Structures are given as structure tokens and as C-alpha cells.
Image 1 (cartoon, chains in turn blue, purple):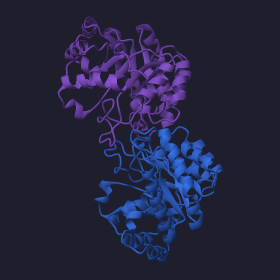
Image 2: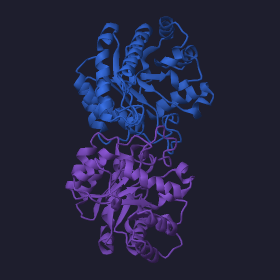
Image 3: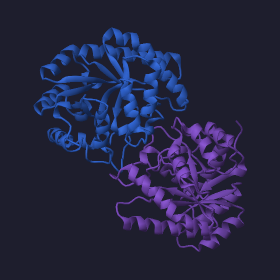
Image 4: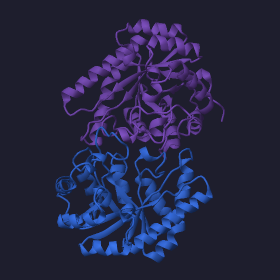
Length: 274
Length: 274
């Protein structure tokens, strides 16, 4: 399989976390990167609409805003608070000019996963009028089962697809991140099903290191681990997907390196491994 | 749902790793524990048959030997070495008087999981004559997807059941560990299918802590985490399972505590949460 096109390379602001978003924008553009996904913390203290314009002025497509979600909670009051925060995210995405919000759906330690899943579906449904008004879509991101305790009760692509099918809205789809799903024996068939649902909204890449020393912040650069990235992109592109390949790496180790060199390595790893 | 019967309480030697097996045997028996699963490292330097007799003299049932497996490897020579080690484990189980070996099936970073799964099935098939001769069964343990990189390419109960169905031997079944499978949306139905295959050979309990600070050695005592242990035991017992509930906890934190107090806590947590 051929290398992925550089025209489809998007990088998440969190990948180069030590840089301010203005720096990331300039450096990404200079490196030939065409897309940027913005994490909400990168917008702190900024005029969001102006920041969106700055990104576009650099020739960057704003691919998505990360992130909304965390719908489940033990009390109705806390679930309402979560909806408020998601409505804020929708307003931010609208101001920024991001067409999509990625959802880390949430889980409550000790609350049955089935209950959390009901609350997630209810939460997303409640946001749809706001999404419609703002012209912003939502992408359910299935998270690795190691996050089922406290970060997401949606742990396989099959579950995300089931939710999309249940919600029956063109505004709701899936953000597929290789880090979370690479191990899944049903991955190929569920990617096809996701596309049949017109729900394959985003595709994220990085790598899985062995050993992984931290469950949150030890992701690998593509090629540093064991995820069959070419195989998975082949499955994704077999559905007709031609959207961005988004590099989303949380790594204490890589954040501690020179970020200019890291960016050059990202572009090379994208050519060699994605 | 009622507490599990103390008559079904088994503890793994690794759970009280600071104790020699002779100490564990005496302490377990005094605490009313009826079963013991022996880790191979606990047998180092000992006469295995005599150790088995010692355990039985304490009134303990020897539930299983942990562990065999690690079948996949990049070369045929290394796969043959893995078979040799498994044959050694079968001989040890026979000498000890353990009717079952738990298999951590293995994975090779970078080797496709599908290839590792083929090698696992081939490896188990190659051992069956030895198992038959020794009167020792094998239990495939599905491991959490966070171990797919390097410890096991079998990551769901569905996959383990598929392998059992493929191998079609009464000598091959499943060891179900709540730590690995609690998040799985297909768990209830696959437990039922496992029992229909006459393959539910063992049931292990512990808990999942949030956050989990180490992927190998930060398991929780039952009640310290978010695994719905009563719900899962209900599914297991609904199939007619009346075997042991085996406490298998790897925890740097708990190993550092007074092991007599820890054993008392295990018995109490078993009553309160299993």
C-alpha cells in the first residue's frame, strides 16, 4: 500500500503541546501540514473566531474541536452540567469554524456501563438541536477498554456504530482512533459498517508501545509500536474515506523533546508508516 | 445476590507473593480457604510431588497451575522452544496433582494478531497428546486488550470460545478472569456460550482501580474498584458453574502490606463483594 497523501495530514494541537496554537499553526503550515484539530485548552484566553481565522490564514483546514462528552454522572444535576459544557463546546466550534466535535463519552466508576451508555445516548440526543443550529457535527470516539472505568463506556467501534444507528441523525458519527481499536478482531467489518452508516467522520493515528508505561501519556509516534497502520488505513480507504489522517499523540516523553525535530519526525513517520 | 460460598474460595500463590508456598498453604487453610492455584515460580527449588502432597495435607484443592502459553514467536525454533516449556508445565502440573494449566497465550509486537492467533491454536493442538497422557487440561485465558501488544492475542471471551470450538477437545477450555473481560458488552452472552461448549474451566476475581497506575501490578482487592463482580458471578452461576472463585491479585501496593492482614481482608472482601 502507498504512503498516505501529505494533503491528508492533520495534526492535533495536543500532539505538540509545548507550543502555543499560534506557533503550531505557523510550524504546521511551513511543514506542509494541511489540517489542524484544536484542543479546547489551546484556545484558553483567546478570541476564538480570530484564532480560527488565523488558522485559515495559514492555509490550514480546521478538522475538529477536541473535545466534548463526559455525559454520564451519578446525579441529574451533574448530567445537566455536562450538557452545559457540551453546549459551550458547540459554541466554541461554531466560533472557531470547526465542523466537528470529538466526543470522549465518559464513564462513572462503579456505575454500570449499560447505564452510562444510556446516559451517553440521551446526552447526545439532547445536543442535536444545538448542533443543527450551529452547523456542528458530533463524533463518538470509541475508547480503549482500559478506559472503561472512568473515561468512556464506549469501548468498541461496534458500540459506537450501534449508538449512531440508534440516534439516526446525520449529525452523529464516529471518530476512529487506531490507538483505541487496533486490537479489535471485528475492526475490519465494523469500519465497513461505520461507512455504510455514513458515519466515518474522522480517523486518528499514532502507535502502541510495548511496554506502555503510562495509560494516558505514553502513546508512540507512528512506527514506534505495533499498530498495523497501513492495514487499518487500507480498510478505512476501502470504504471511500478520503478525509484527514489525524496525528494525535499524548506523550510525556515526546513533549520533552525539541518540538521542531518532533514535527519533522511526525511528517517522516506519516510518510513511512501511515 | 448472596455472597459466594467460602467453600468455593481459592487464592493464587501470586496474590500473597511475599509468602513461600508452604506459608501460603498453612495460612490459607487456617483462614478457611479451600483451594489454591499455584504459580510456577512458587515451585522453584522444590520437589513438586511433595509440595502437591503438602497442599493436600492442608486440605487444599489444587485448582490449577499458572501458567503455560506464550506460543507465538517469529521463528519456528522459538515456537518449538515455547512448546518445550509448555510440556514442562504439563509435567509439573501432573507431578503437583493440578488438573488444569492456565494459558497466557502470547503475542509478538509487530506480528499480525491474526498470525499470532493461528500460532496459538497450532501450539495448543500440538500439546493435546501430552495433556491426554498427563490427565491435565488447558484453559485459554482471554487477556485485556491492553495486553494485545505483547502478552496475548486472545483479548475477548468470544475469541477464546472460538478457539475452543475450533480445537474441539474436551481438554481445552477457558479461564475467565473478571479483570480482563469486565468491560466487554458481549460478556453475558459469551459466558453462556462458553458453558454450552462445556468450556468454563476456571473463574478468577479481583478489581479494576481508577486510576490504574501500572498495567501489570496494580490490580485491586475486590470492592476497591469498578468491576460488577456480583453481576458477573450471577452470569457465571446461571450456567450451572459451581467451581472455585479464584482470587488472583498482582499488586505492588498490596504485596507491600502485612500479608496476614491482607489475607483477612481477602476473605472479608470475598464475602462482601464476590
